[in-house]
Image (tube, rainbow, N blue to C red; front, side):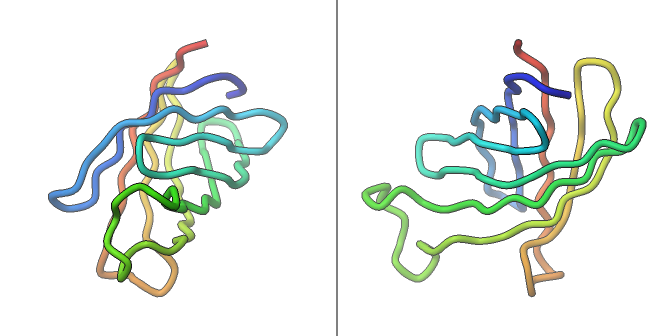
Length: 104
């Protein structure tokens, strides 16, 4: 599981791409507008992650959504790819899906 992963995320009509580094149970990464930090745990083919997504200060994201959001994600790993999904804290009506492909 450790390495650099290409991440494609989608939540409703919103989607984007970024990079995530997974190492020693920790996650670090980002995309053009956000940073990702958190932790992950692998249990066989299952993957669990707690991720905090925060906008860059000057990213141009509207102030009403320009604050960090925490997600609990769960899913599975298959070879060099993984798929996880979950909800932001206190928002069960919003679903985030992340598809990961191992880069290095």
